[in-house]
Length: 73
Ligand SMILES: [Zn+2]
Ligand SMILES: [Zn+2]
Image 1: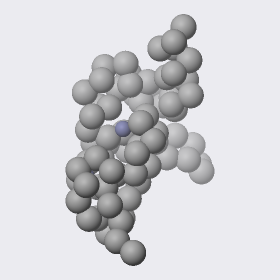
Image 2: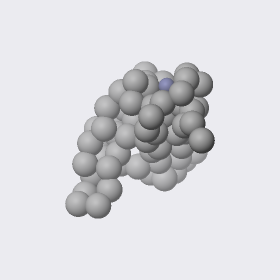
Image 3: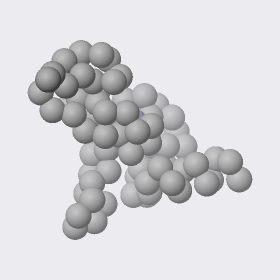
């Protein structure tokens, strides 16, 4: 079963889950990724990278839960 990138709809050999929109995206749509702890990794897609709020949260090693809490507050 082929994997599909949920951002560009292209077939990809491997997907990662964006921590900020929850979509499964291929490497070409991953803007950046970093290690948040020994066991977890943060992935941000190109769409969320252009969102200054999400980008700031990413740079502070925050995950999506923190983002929604701050945005709705
Ligand atoms: Zn893609
Ligand atoms: Zn995203």
